[in-house]
Length: 281
Image (cartoon, rainbow, N blue to C red; front, top):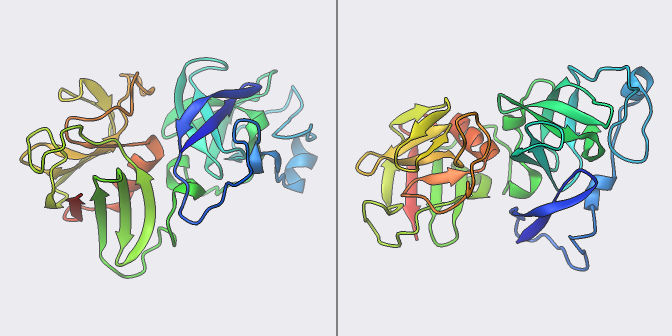
């Protein structure tokens, strides 16, 4: 379903965001409602130390630095920009936590550590808090999680790829840990070279660094190879050479399974060499 994406002073554009089964959105106008983003939980210690809250979001005195604190996204989806009001390099979702590495600017932009790249988010859509021992890539958006947590429940870790729905589900035994939409091939054949071909596979290689792929003619990171006959694997959406999202970043692939930045990092950390991958209709 389409959901509004916020930054600056209002809605910016529409994007795709998974909502877990059983959720009810009846009667909510997503183009106007900020939902839970209007509820910002600030720790008293931060208020006393850094300043006051003005309406919603984070606000600090102009001469104070927020560097080193942890913040959480407090709206549905927010854009992460290369510079304040600049090029969009990614998105973050409700509940994700990030470390502040600079700011705020006079107009309330915070520089955060976004998967190893520095980006800016407007403080209006951030709340104080988060896990000081985690990075943004360690926290899955609440609406994209299926059940349980990433902590092992003692079963086999494996990955299910459903070509019919476009959903990728990470399992620990029979427990679905995370489920998220992914871009896959437009080739609908069972086993064509350019298809996200059906079959049972095993992860055989991993490459986390940003690198160029001649197949997609784009840059990717967090590549997890599972189909040696076609060089298919999981990886991030298409990126520019400096790490920003490329144009048509979530377009159909040449066979690989392309994920949002947080999901690609999450899957990369979840699997090991030998992890089973099942691809099917």
